[in-house]
Image 1: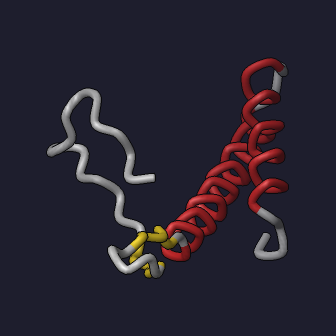
Image 2 (image 1 turned 180 degrees about the vertical axis):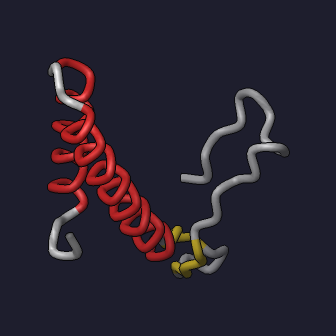
Amino acid sequence: MADLTFEQALRRLEEIVEALETEDLDLDKSLKFFEEGVSLSRHCNQQLQVAEKRIDVLLSKADGTLATEPFVLPDDSSSQPGDEPPF
């Protein structure tokens, strides 16, 4: 599974969800799909966490130069309706 891209894993996860929702599967097949789906979900989550750590926000300084700082998600508890994301 480690060799799957995020997009490949997400596509497979969508296929599994579709099958679980629409197909008449026996319990064993449903459990196998569910287990694979959980693994794919974890794989996607790990890749998203890595990507999140790599995001930098470019800031323009007063002297016209650019600097980077780590991207930090706003705390949901402190955000107000209408608050804009930092980018």
